[in-house]
Image (tube, rainbow, N blue to C red; front, side, top):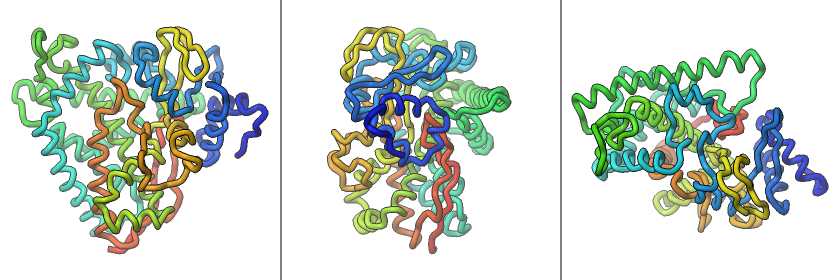
Length: 427
């Protein structure tokens, strides 16, 4: 689909507000974003019912807004629609929806919990889990990649790192799928009444489960991440375990962090891995280049897969202070949306052919993990390690590994989710 030069702003803004737009082929959506980037400044997207947002589609604008949290705030929520107050009260505020001291405190606790020893053990575990998954793949010969391969790696690695007992893991995997299945997808009235409740029930059960594990680890700590999170101590803190006291995560905080880690960490890595297989199938020259010297090209290949697929399409922000950005003055109370999927194809940064897939691209300042600032993805290193480990196994052990069809995309405006992908290989 090509948008004519005249009327590009109106057509592009209308497209972003249309749920059907997000079910169109990726090439058509990218063409709309290219037209919006060519305009003089951000366009307003009318969401109806008196709501709307300004679309930030250029790399420089998305990056600047990301690094000014006092101006472009994450609270009350980064998703569309924003979480209702009663949902936040019941489940607690996710770190991704917080700003200022509240966000800084939670992030410090989490960063302190990721000790060098824990990270070193996680990296060893990633290699072992990736090898085991490919062992199973070679033995069982599955023909669907998401369930058999891509979903397993991040789920198993995070559960191992958190110290989740094996008996809970099948239910957690099911709850993650239910909780995230319809994020950013417009539905009919009946589904709107039914599906969100099911998703919230999935989150509630998952949070109750991890809260119980957290209580047990307070009494009997281990070497896992949950033990570190619930027993973390910060200078000048009060009694351990209380909500918001500066020491350890309380039950709701632990549940909110676990939900964020499972949904964001599992979903985004799963999707990047699946899109990666599609890209390597569509570009056999790049696949052979990487396979011929894996370590030389691994970092560049992983970053190019993340740039090209952009697992998180967009995040929302609320303007807190007047600010000039991209040729427009934003006012307090206005909403903006950071379209990472557009910023990662910006011709001003990625050259005249930003849609090209090139594992040797250097530099590659993609915004697949955010645009910097205090909300830069905490799991970026972990995700990169997981992708490196799995693709090492996939490119060196089976032969003729390739996708055999198009990815079944979920049609979401929030994440570039793949439901399934058929594939084949020769053991």
